[in-house]
Amino acid sequence: MSLVLKYVDDFHTLMNKNGDPRTANWLLMSSPFYTLGICLSYVYIVKVLGPKLMENRKPFQLKNTLIAYNLFQVIFSAWIFYEIGMSGWLTGRYNFRCQPVDYSNHPNSIRMTHAAWWYYFSKFTEFMDTIFFLLRKKFSHITTLHVIHHGIMPMSVWFGVKFTPGGHSTFFGFLNTFVHIVMYTYYLLAAFGPQMHKYLWWKKYLTTLQMVQFVLIMAHAFQLLFIDCNYPRAFVWFIGMHAVMFFFLFKDFYNQAYSRKFRKSSAVTANGVANGITNGYASNHEDKNGYSKQNGHTPKQNGVRDATDYYTNAQLRQRTTTVQ
Image 1 (tube, rainbow, N blue to C red):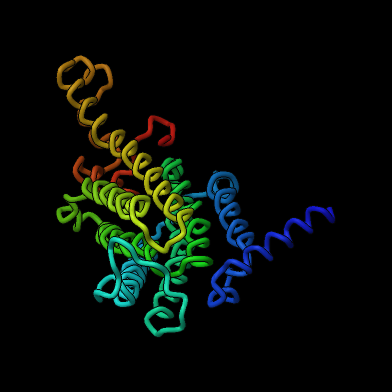
Image 2: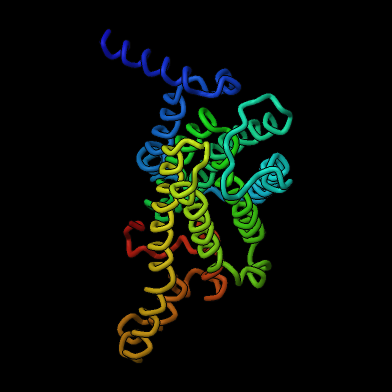
């Protein structure tokens, strides 16, 4: 046990020696183990404890709560986007090809450092996406993509705030907060109910926007492998490979949510009436909407309502499984 404690102490010494002294004493910045503990607790709650607690309970109706939450996320994301932009990326002071970290106490540098920490903190507020799924008993929406995306982001961003709270790496947060402004605006509109569904035709393009984001982050990060820039090479790989991983996760989701759905719909049309008679309901209707008529909603309403729950079409139906 004493040996383990010694290794932990040596690790903390290494972190503090190489970390940015400006953020060393900020909330949750002294050690990565606090963030790691929160992330592991999140995974346990949403995958194990939460479903058990809600198993024999009725789903909560959270319309007003969801409206308030999504409005908060829109405003919070917009503010972080503005702060990161006005600290560098929207001012002309930051170079898109190579931007070393400014570790000075210059007002712009300090402003960017604070914006980086708030971006880190926003990764915790996004845990509420999953908590609301639990409370509404939408367990199928808590997919592998969902949990991976939310579960590792705080830990990933922690290293950025600890060692490089500024410069090249903040481009990730700059783009990501913009995407979240769009995404949570969509969820906000959807939370108002069926009367807003006619304005939500663009659900499919949210996933496309996510993938474009990761392509831009990949290109922006990996260019430093070919450019002489005073920026840690380890973080180039760290950020770039994160973008690669998320791109393929979202691409797989897109294929399952739309491409396969289109093929299934086409196959049903080709098969004709036989499947419709067998199922007692038009199969192409059921494939498109994921619900039967007994839900009391029109097909269009079903298709849009559950599409808003997560990453533009989270119902996926998933055929009793989760997205892999």
